[in-house]
Length: 362
Image (cartoon, rainbow, N blue to C red; front, side, top):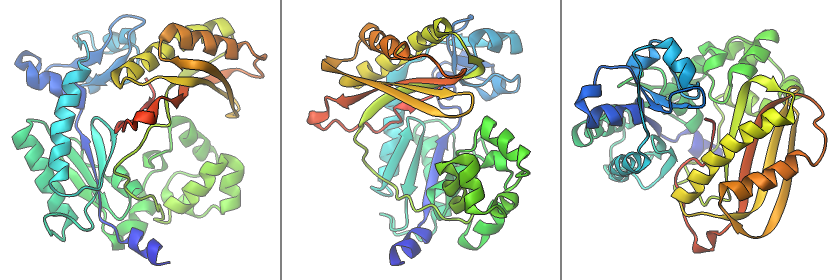
């Protein structure tokens, strides 16, 4: 009970950089400032990794094809990603975080949770700390950041999206339940587009609607996630800020706009996923022995198939060979809405700490 009270009385900040990759490119190249830019590849096979706010006005966003992005915004400028530069900037930002607390949990290069319940500045106001951090990022790095502040990670994450870009929102302990009840269901972190539609069909449009559903009802319709939704809408999310995370697996996955029915089309997608996975592995000098293929069907059922190699691999062609073997292991039972590949059983005897999100959509 004491632990629950402690967690519920935590002061958590979620810092989220504004259009990070695109903003770095505009900062480094003044000619790009004020213009619609997309970081990533143009053309039919290219994918947008990030878009500037000028481009977002035209419906350009991450994960859409370069072809579609250019169609939405004919004046769009494509810039090749420079991950070394993004990591360099991210490290500078992280050092600012450490001036306030050692309890920093990076989610990716451009966002992190900070637990400032007890902080190095002795400042009792998480709101003022967030303001100071954002000002320092702007003054010392040259980029804007947004922040959410509340009693737990879930609410802080949701709140950081409210006043973007270059803003922040605090949800005080006595405001939590009202905030969650009034929150549109599509703004709940962890509720994606498909789940939102499913909730709409069940008459759930706001947190208040969600709160009225019994836990058994939510588990019946959403599986394990149902228990999560039942808890978070009541302000309960007892996940501590974890400053170090040792990667147990590295993965990439993609949810398709249209379900796939042919293994041939699936192989094309797996090739792209394997290429992204290879880049991630090489970036952190990681290899592994166990390849796992993740398949989510149109009925949302999930299936995984794994194979362990006698040696460590990180090469795209070897990963793809195993993924292909796993794909054809048995016949598909339905059309497929998501495919993913992950590599486990890693060479982490060297205790390599990977402080970035290594599982992502593209």
